[in-house]
Amino acid sequence: IKDVVFVIDSAKIRLASYNPNSRVSSLNSVFASRSNLKQRMGRAGRVQPGEYYLLITKTKHDSLPYNLPPELLRTDLQSTVLKIASLKSLDTLVHIESMRSQSAPPGARGLDEWRPSLRREGPPIPSVCDDVSTFLAQAPTPPSTGSIGEAIDSLRALGAIGTAEVIVADNPSASAEVGSSRRRLGYQPMRRRVREAVTPLGRVLADFSVDPWVGRMVLTGVAMRCLDPVLTVASLLGGSEGGGGGGPAGVFTMRPDERSVARRVLAAAFARDGAASDVLVSARAFDAWKRVASADGMSAAR
Image 1: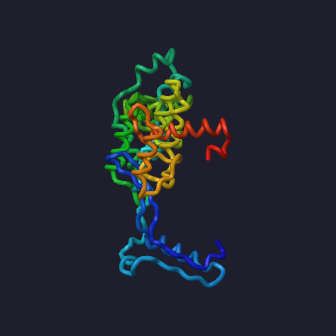
Image 2 (image 1 turned 90 degrees about the vertical axis):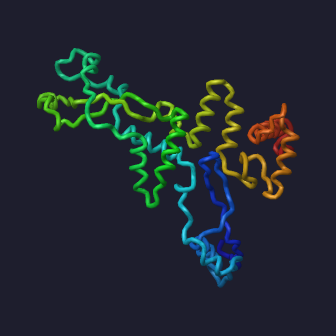
Image 3 (image 1 turned 135 degrees about the vertical axis):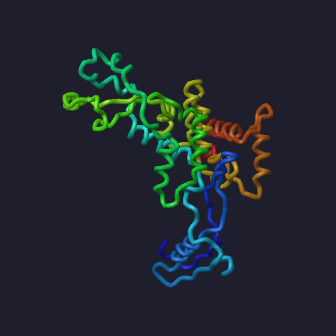
C-alpha cells in the first residue's frame, strides 16, 4: 500500500504446524523471525518518509531466529511423500499391466510363455522409503528420516502404498543371454520383482489436492452413495482455520478467548442424539445455512 506511513508491528505471525502424534494441523500465533520483521519495516514510507514501531524489546528481537523453519519441516508430509512416490514409480517401474502391449522376444509363441521365463534374481530394488528419502535429501533443509517414515507408515495403513509385483528393465550390456539380433528388434531383458510401490488407490489420491485420508473419505462417500455430506465434511477438514482455529474451518469464526463458549452454543443448536463432534456440528450448520439461503435468499442466510 503506497501511502502507508506508520507501521505498528506486534512481532507475531500465524504459522501452520503439524503434530504427528495427534495427526492434527493447527495455525498458531508465534513470534516472527528477524527477516520477517525486516520485511515489515520496509512497508513504512514506500513513497515518503515513514515510521516503524516494533512492540518487543531489543533483547527479544536479538534472540529471534533469522529465519523460521521451512514449511517442509512443519507440515504433514503425507501428500508430499505420496506425490513423490507416485512420480518415482511412474519414472522407474514398468508394471506388469503395461507389458501386455509389448512384443514377446523371438522364439516365444506368446506373452504367457515369455512371462514364466523372467528371471527373479538380482540386487534388491530400492523401497519407496529409499526413493522418497533420496529425493527429499536434495532439499536445502530436508525433513528427518523419522518424519518420512511416519508419513509412509500412515500411507501404508491407508492403502496408498503396498506390495506389488513389477517388471523392471535389466541392463542389456550386462546380460550375455541377449544376442545382437534381439537388441536390433528392440527386445530388452526384464526381471520380475516384488517391491513396495504406490497402489492404484494411491495414484488416484496423489492427484487430489487434499490430505490423502480426506481424499479416501471422498472416494468412500462415492462408493457408499453419500457424497454430498461427505464433500461438506471434506471441505471443512481440508480448509485453513479461518478466525477460529482448533477445529473445522470455513463455517464459524471464533475469537480465541471465546472458543469454548462458542462451541457449547453451537453444540446446543446443531448437535443431534448426543453427538457433539465439531465436524458433524459444522456440517449440520452448513446444511441449515443452505436451506435458509435456498428458501429466503443470501441476505437472510447471512
